Length: 212
Image (cartoon, rainbow, N blue to C red; front, side):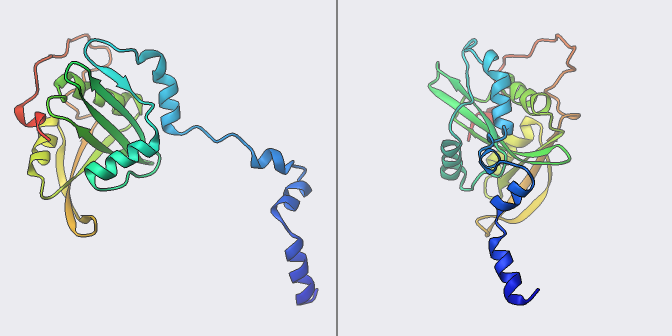
């Protein structure tokens, strides 16, 4: 086959033609329903159980574009791939907290981003978030990256049970270092065994857990 013939044959070789030769209908292939994301699956599971209880309301149907905008505006960075999130609202305080898990790793690690207003983070809420991450999402490790110029947030992470693991150089905007803090499900002090019926204290967390 000459070069001209090969070029002509290549021009005729379209994706639609390949699919038809394989006995497939291109219309059906191109219009397959979008696969469920991790967040879609989580919403499907939690929706029947997310009625308001006590003083907190769980919201997880915020649009991804809105969640991304909140993180960009308040944290100064985009969220990664395959994000899932929950928002906890305290109507009695007119305040809330947003928890985003994103960029899951094959070894069951993912990054956590927390945006919370003052007075929202209590021990029961931390317990619920740990249950959501380690039991609900099946994660083994959760990592948070904190700007090096925010020692208050580093102290919050420590008090919440995260352990310092190192420095990510020039992580934020290519100039600011980030501290890496991580928590594993096996070491999480907030989680009792699934069979435990021990009540969770409603006492407020240490004062530094209430300041962002």
